[in-house]
Image 1 (cartoon, helix red, strand yellow):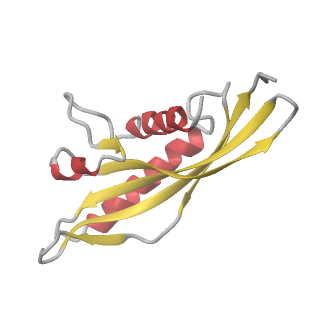
Image 2 (tube, helix red, strand yellow; image 1 turned 90 degrees about the vertical axis):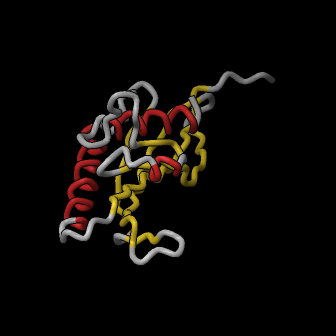
Length: 153
């Protein structure tokens, strides 16, 4: 497979979480496309971006690619006192989904995954704005892809 295909599996699992499902052709999730934040399409947004990775030799013809993907949860800031609790609920729902689907929907390739919240909620301001436009929190998803290799020499 490779990292791009694994990242697509992560996005598919994210889109299965209530609140992140594409609706009528409008999506509030993406792979690295921050322009969705300007769409007004959702009460919450999820953006998937690459983390780090490395490869370990498993056997003579099997490699274990250890990938990290960052799932950013963006909550539009509404001055109603519940923006933070909405963000916390959405982060919890996403983590629960990744715990339930440790193989990201492809147990033939993905060995395990482990979601972890990596930072505290962060307020994000618009340029020249009076206050935060969003609060966001990152989830780090670590997983292992098994790759069979046929040697050419």
